[in-house]
Structure formats: C-alpha cells, structure tokens
Length: 65
Image 1 (cartoon, rainbow, N blue to C red):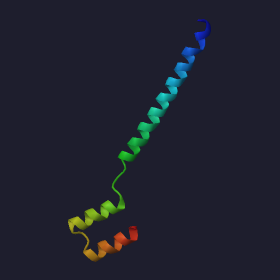
Image 2: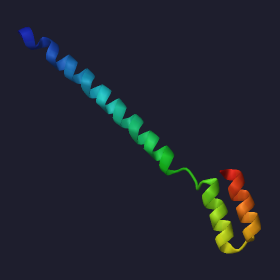
Image 3: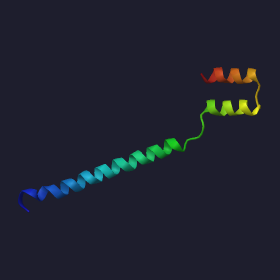
Image 4: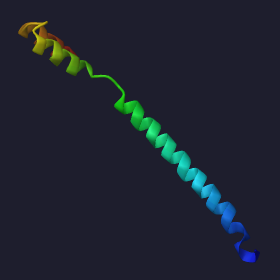
C-alpha cells in the first residue's frame, strides 16, 4: 500500500464524524419540530374560540411580553 496506507483509515474516520454530525442535526431538528405551541399561540387560540374576553386577552398578552 505504501504511501496511501493512511488514506482509508482517515476516510473512515471522516465518514464517521460526518455521520455523527448528521445524526445530531436530525435529532435536534426533530426536537424543535415536535415542540408544542407557544404560550402566545395558546392564548390566541383561546381568544379566537371565545373562551376569554378582550380585557383578559390583553392582560395575559401583556404579561407574556
């Protein structure tokens, strides 16, 4: 193999590093995508369904800001 004896082990290590980075990136993306609605979105939904009135909506929205 001579001078190219270091090439295959190096490529394997680089491939494993790239694979690990890909797995980490996908797991982080899934964590973000699976998170539920924010408090503001829940408040907006409750207001849209008529569960809270204008004054209550404004008060709670101000507290979230």
